[in-house]
Each structure stands twice: as structure tokens, then as C-alpha cells.
Image (cartoon, rainbow, N blue to C red; front, top):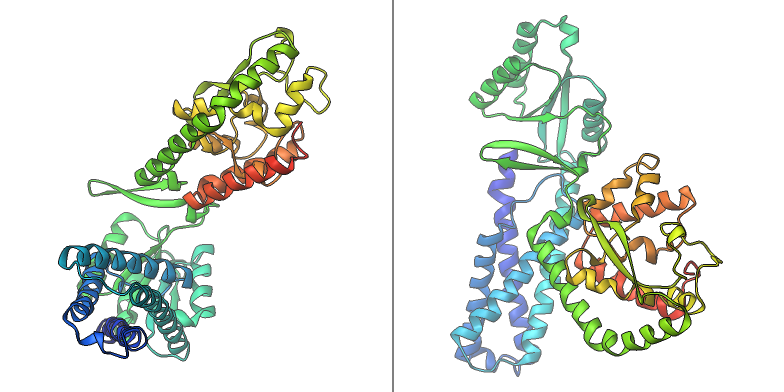
Length: 459
């Protein structure tokens, strides 16, 4: 049964893509090249050959036909969009090197757009058809489960309740029914697997010891059976695990985050630098002198306020702000509250408009903060909540930010309420685990909108 996929489905996917590319080329030629008149010219024929070659090169690089039975539609769309992006980049790069002859812009744009649409539609359609086909009892894999616990019961429920993925559960083996006699248990597993032509064996990782697992591996290798292990559920969310390799040793890493990826870190850092320089050149350069003079005229004390905050890896740094309160050493470190008598008249305006945060772009340029991230808390606030709010310190796995997801979702300002703080932390962790460059852009624009309209939580 599994060989059907390799022998039929992959070639169908490939030739379907090629047919779509060439059919779209002919359609665009008919409508945008004088009803095929220009299609027969050499440079458009070369462009068609280049389009086909580029798809094959993209396929060899990204291997898009390595699809899996248990695959979401979203993951199919993501993988298809990646290969389409690479495909267009290769065409554009190669076309510029191979020929300098002008192609109709309208023709090229429609060719790209229609190709992307129909290939995406083709991929989703074939995936949905395969699910329907498997749900009807075709192209299935025979499986058995070794072990009986909550994890294997969940796996059994998955096989029974989601037949569209093409798994048929034949039997569950429980070593406890054999009184712990592994020899008799293992013999039954072997005989049953061979007699029923089992394709895959799912084994609870806690079911057997190391020697017994070695024997099971030896048997499945010899009989060319797929052996897969089910980790015992211990209350962890396994979405938070990835596997890394130290040499040939697999290492499970808990709570991987997108910003662990070097490319993502570089992307975020480049954006931080460019955006901060833009603020310094076009905003800070003329606004700083005005704010500084107004602060000095309004009350005695320095223009800037510097406070120790917790940053990346819980390291301390000096966080800069425009001073918005009367200088009082005795109350330094006491959190400001709504209606606080220490807030100056100018400071109230600065805090309401978030202009008091502008000096933190210096922290960004110094690499201590990011434009977007969890807000840095004073040290005493960390000491207050770290043992009382679950996962509170997780927010320190990335750099703090001038603004953040929690702030644009309304969790800004006074943090004396533990419930509000807990919700803020959940937002921070969500951001940490789901970071993307587009999410940062959304937060930046939402922050600017909030500043213009005024934030009721700011004071």
C-alpha cells in the first residue's frame, strides 16, 4: 500500500505542476501576445523553456513532493508558497542573465499570478482528494500499537477517528496481559506483524527497556517495517520541543522560539537599527531639544531618568526615559500609579503620549532592547512576581522592547493587579513563541495608532 504513493502520487504531482505552468503560459500568450503571434518568437519560447527548467531546479532544491500523510492544509500552503517564491526568483535572475529582450510586463505578471493560483489550487485539491480516497478505505497503512497508556490511547483514537490520513489500526498489544513475559509477548508481536502484513509499529517509549527495544529494532529492520516511538505524556506540550543533533546524538530542546534562528535574529536586529536611526534623524533631532527645555523649565532635576531593568537572559541594564516625575530619592523604585502626585504636569503629557519612552531607542542601538518585545520590568517587580506567576521569567528569553504585543492588546500601565500582570505575561509568551517580522510590523503600526488616539491605560 505505501508504495502506491511513491509510484503514482509523486509523479502525478510533478506532471500536474508542469502541465499547469505550460497551460498558463499558453493562456497568457493567447490573451496578451496578439493571440499567439508573439508566442512563436524565439525570446518567448526561451522564456517558456526557462520557466520549466526553473520549476525543476526549484523542485530539486526544496523537494516539495516529500509530503506526509498527517499534514495540515496550512503547511501545504506554506510549502507551496516557498517553492513558488523560489521559482519566481530563479526565473527573474536567470532571465536577466540569459536575455535582455523585453518581455511584456502584463504577460509576465499574469503568468506569475495565474501559475501561483493554479498550482496552489492543484496542491490543495490533490491533498483533499487523497484524504477522501483514504477515508473510503484505500491507500491505507496497517499499524499496531505496543503499550497501553494515555499516550497510546490518544494515538489509537487518532487512527480510529481520522481515517482520512490512511491508517488502519489492527491491534494493541499490552505486555501486562503476558504477565511481563517479554519473550512470549515479542513472539506474538512478530507473528502477528508478519501474518497481517503490518506496515508500521507504534511503540510506547516507556513500554520496553533498552535491550527489548534493541530486539524490536532488529526485527523491524530485518522485515522492513517502520518503527515509531510514542513518548509518554508527562504534562508537557510537545509542540514546544524540537530535536537538535550534537554530532550523531539527538537532543530534545524545550521551548524553541523563532528568534533562536540566526536569520530571524539578524532580520529583527537590522529592523531595530534602521527604525531607531530613522527616529533619531527625523524625530529625535528636533523633538529632543524641545522636550529637554520644557522638562527643565517645569521642574528641577535631570532631563533623563535611568533605571535598572531586566533584559535578555535576565541581565540588568540601564533603561533610559525622559524624566516625568519630581526627583525624589526616597521614593525611587516605587511604581507610579494613576494620579501619582510625583508626576509633573509635563510628565503627565509625556506619559500619556508615550514620548517619555523615546530615549529607549538609544537602548535599542546599544543592543540592550528591541523595538518590539516584552516590556522590561524594574528589578523589584521581577522579585515580586517571579515566584507567584507561572512562567513569568520566560519573557527574558528574548530582548525587551519599547512596545509589545501585551501593550497593544491593552495590558499597559499600572501592574499592581496580579490578574492583569498574568494576562500580560501570557501575551509576552505568545509573542515569544509566535514571533514573525510581520507581527513586529503590525505591533509598530498599532502602537503608532494608539499613541495618536490616546491610550486610556497610559498616565
